[in-house]
Length: 318
Image (cartoon, rainbow, N blue to C red; front, side, top):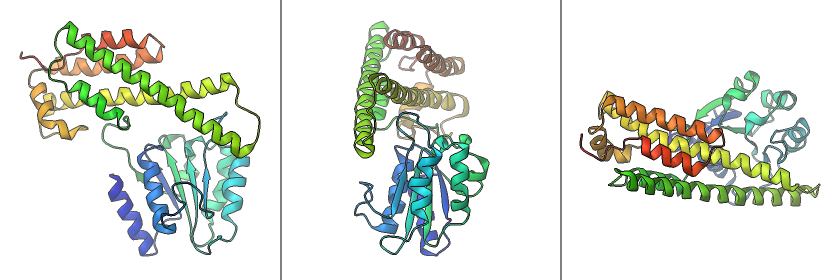
């Protein structure tokens, strides 16, 4: 479901007084799922202080920085207890759980009664990109909003657009051109690594300032950066996969088949016409092998050079 369509449905339900108490929002928790939450909250509370997470009647809960889980103590102090109190402004109260799949059994049980028997004018937004990790008792008590796009998760811009620009370049045939494409993709991954470190540094600083607790060690910080970078790299692989899947879909099912990269339909169709079905399917296998090689911690630049050499981009006539 597109974000705008999902928001319209929930907005109408709120206007008509038939909104659910809990919404399970499945999608990118730093992208569309979070944006959907902001849109709903702005409808309920107005735009002021929503996006800076400073509104007193909106209670946020994220996985704890070092453990990457949501503990029962955090659930009780940040969601359960505040949501049972009278609203500061006398209107709505909202509880937003980002990364709800990180909620363990004890925390889920602590939250369950509040979810089942909320006070009036209460709404919960549970954001996740791994709903299969949630307890069935939580899932069954929420209305699901699935924002996952065709082809699954992918990079956010500007990196998504840059990946597509590299893959859609006019000349991608020959050793030199393919090596240049590999170098550009490797540079993009390097930038994603720098972005991962930047984001974690911001999160660590905010968490330490908020809790005034023990400082994050160097090893813990590096582990957090590595985990965030692996997320980015996985999304990078999904973006690349979406391109080559589109080529295979057109080659095997025709130009009217639904595509993940629909704005490139004309270009994709022209390239798919230059590939055999076997070549198109081997390309998809090559992307899957690329992702597997990354997970084995092989040298990324070398893996990308081997990948671009292996695939057929469809830029040459048969």
